[in-house]
Image 1 (cartoon, rainbow, N blue to C red):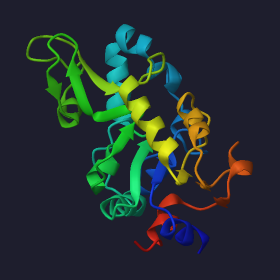
Image 2 (tube, helix red, strand yellow):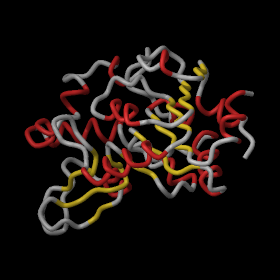
Image 3 (cartoon, helix red, strand yellow):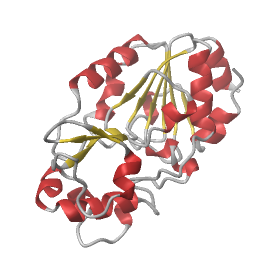
Length: 235
């Protein structure tokens, strides 16, 4: 298996993943045939997940958010678990993820750069107190802190910038990598998709069921589910 050989010969591996990494945990992606963006709502999902909508239609935002963005039942799949193993063995430098589900950390990964934030971090906009995802899921209407302040998920909504420290860490890790594995992403969401451009290492691998703009640049392209491919890797 070519990927096994590349992993065996590399010591600074970075994994860059998108929604397709978590589909095998039962979390729908965004742009596939059954994805979130093809479902019918009163407003387009891009609108409901925007900063403007959060502040102008807060109750409607949270109705959608609780219904579609809080898969607290989801468990790490073979991909998440294998990446945690690779990190524990000192082979994997970092995971850079566009996902907000926290499954990489649940599997045991430590060095994770969450470009779009996490559903597991929620803060009061008034007193900045931390609130769990379980609290948000159990609340009704607009969740409020004890101080009366509005609670906001620490996720990057449309119209908001990425966190500067997270971006810096992700870019630095990718620039150091000798093997970059890009998986489960259509590479259409910017600026995150542009991070691949800083890679200067030896081996670039893509694992994705559909074609992407990166295909022609890769040493190896695998058209298969991420969990199936990584689950077969021996660490």
